[in-house]
Length: 529
Ligand SMILES: [Zn+2]
Image 1 (cartoon, rainbow, N blue to C red):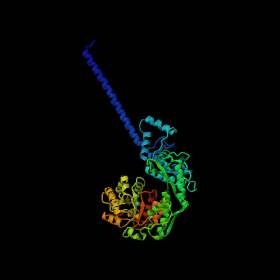
Image 2: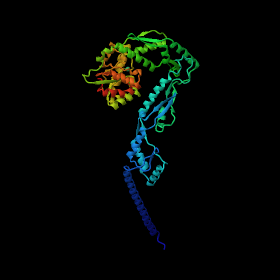
Image 3: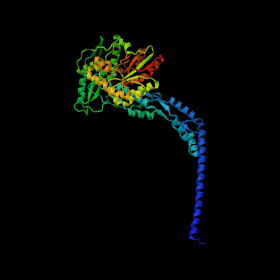
Image 4: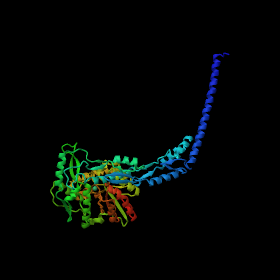
């Protein structure tokens, strides 16, 4: 039978519609089943979160029959017993342990990973995966965070050690073999490479120590002639001792001392500033250590402040001129003014920690971290031009509740400057600091404690109160951490105004112990105003 075209089309339409609705029903049923199963799985997962995990291994340790918190306990225990990572440099082994870098189990990440791999998704896949894991074919690595700040601290510490060690063997001044500068000159840690190695190897330390990535500090190749001239110069510079006198006490750098203090550095070439030339100077760190010992002796005998600024200038002027005559360094303000310089606390057992010479992006934030962790407020005397370089750090100092004081624009010894220059040093620093402080900065500490009538008049004019100190542990001379803690703690007293610096590693290292000890002795901490 042949139906008319019109009827035929209508029939086909009806048939098609029926087919379409059947397909739709099928899809709807599938979706319903899918949603049902998915909800079932979700419910199953929720239930499973509190029940043992089957078949999973973490770093080859079977963690079957443990709940998620149980697994976390296993991982935490593993962190506590992490083997130390060893680095080798110059025949010496440097060990890095979990407590050095601050390893934390990232429990959120760990739980998420265990749940994802063990309990969600395709049921069949999960069973296969767990069985594979159970049979030892699959293992899950545990995850952790290494503290960025702690790692940086560790790198800085290593860098200091390497720099100190590398100096004497540079040119061998001690044994007078100054003719040749060996190929291995000054050395320093390649911090970026070190941090990568630390990250990559920390959780699975190789059996043998990893060589520390150390590089030469000399950037350019130097001509034989240049090295020869340096050799001659160095012999002249170390052939007679340098000495200064302060309060009748003589400080001498013997010819042997000078040999160990001498160091070679690269300087911009005066004729062609794009290039560098070799130059001789005294190692700042070692000179500071020696001067620090002398300063402590002078102050103990005279009860007056040792003028390390002038002492250093006197030593360097003799060093470079080659003329050696004993220079007398007058001592500064008498330390008999202790009661004036310390703060009147009205009998309260409180103490003032003060940090000069900041801000900077390395040590200053480390010190802020310690103060924050210990919930202590301190006073920071900031240098104007350094503040412009590290604005964020300066701002953080204020935000975290510390007091801010003026420490001049360029950290100059003010009594050497004209009245106008002194005013500029103070006023321009006020302009910078007042913005950060949100109010006029009203305390001022002259660098090196350098005061004369002009300094006094200028600060008065700007409404600045001069705040010196009465406890000077000389952290600038880089004593050991133990020694620095000892110096602060033994001279602490109610109202003590303690002079520290926010640009030294040893200060950041010693600070937690200084605070803990003073706290245990019943001290509270205040800021200067
Ligand atoms: Zn200073």
